[in-house]
Amino acid sequence: QQKVQQSPESLTVSEGAMASLNCTFSDGTSDNFRWYRQHSGKGLEVLVSIFSDGEKEEGRFTAHLNRASLHVSLHIREPQPSDSAVYLCAKSNTGYQNFYFGKGTSLTVIP
Amino acid sequence: DAGVTQTPRHEVAEKGQTIILKCEPVSGHNDLFWYRQTKIQGLELLSYFRSKSLMEDGGAFKDRFKAEMLNSSFSTLKIQPTEPKDSAVYLCASSLFQQDTQYFGPGTRLLVL
Image (cartoon, rainbow over all chains, first blue to last red; front, side, top):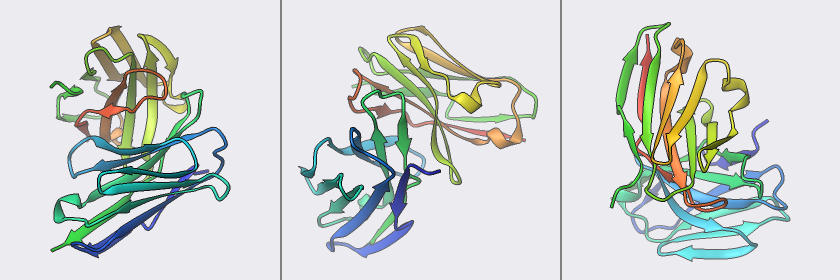
């Protein structure tokens, strides 16, 4: 049973248009969430960490967390072709031994 | 600014061989993680060390996978014996403390024939 599910699997947007990615989880009363980006052949790069309901902004990346609806999203403002990558959502509980990743959303930004 | 380093970047092994992957975490970080990444399963946690103590041994991966942290700046992941289904990217990550952000290495791409 997948504890973290991401949608869509792939997304294509034009340069400058907002990109929105979604992540739903099975339970999250005490979980923390992070969004990572992975360019092809590279490791993961953290974008945003969010620990409480509401919004967290890091540059062009904004995460929204709603624990009641078991949902966390990532919005990318003014995406550029260099943002083309796989975006991964991850959740960890306070014990930290359980750390789950979604399978990712492949984003393509076309000029 | 040294991040997480992993060697080798690519490895090709015959079925049944023993392979050892290496990882150097960010200097000063206390937590170290090994993950396996495949298209089908995504990222799966293999091992987790806190201050060199093994906290999580990956459950289903225990039989052929063994991670060790010989000192605070070096870890190995041994796969013995390798099977074709082990073909994947193996990622190492480190973090300063519990709940802190994990910093990932570039990974080792393993192909088992």
